[in-house]
Amino acid sequence: MNRREFIGAGGPVLAGLVLATPVRGAWPSRDALEIRMRSDVRGERVWFDPVGVLVDPGTTIRWVVEANVHTATAYHPTNGDRPRRIPVGARPWDSGYLVNPGDAFETTLTVPGVYDYYCLPHEQAGMVGRIVVGRPPFDADALPAEARPIPDAALRNLPALDRILRERAVRVLFP
Image (cartoon, rainbow, N blue to C red; front, top):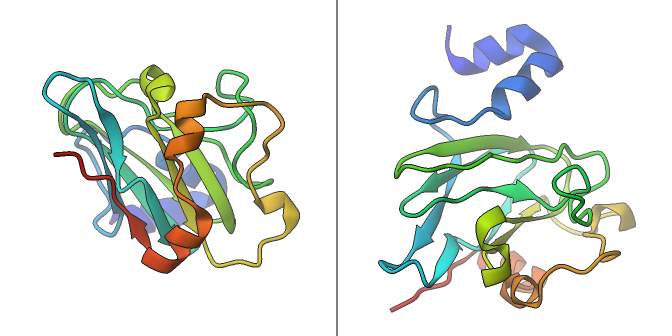
């Protein structure tokens, strides 16, 4: 039985449990879109690569550590009382700390809208990302909430929605 058959046999409850579990080398999805968790040699610059992506509903996203310790954490009140910056009805995620190069975490995004996420130890340094699921127009509840502030560095590093829609993947390249 492959992973899709396994998930299908377990229904939505089991699928959510499986997809919200760190991969750490087991059962990686072959068709997942990968986002690399990067750092320069000294750890002074940290970023998600790509920092912004456009995907279809139902796409599995896999975050993979290249260096340093990172998390992939949705902006949502259940994750450290952060503001909700994912669509209403979407399941928030938190990878927990991914420590070793190659450690990975996956989740599948099904609700159309804009999903903002951050790295817990590096949010203040601006390590954030944005995923757009589907294409606008979204309903008003699908857009990120700005009720509580997030760090200025995080706001500066989130790519604009129109840029993501135009380029499909936005990368930050450091020398």
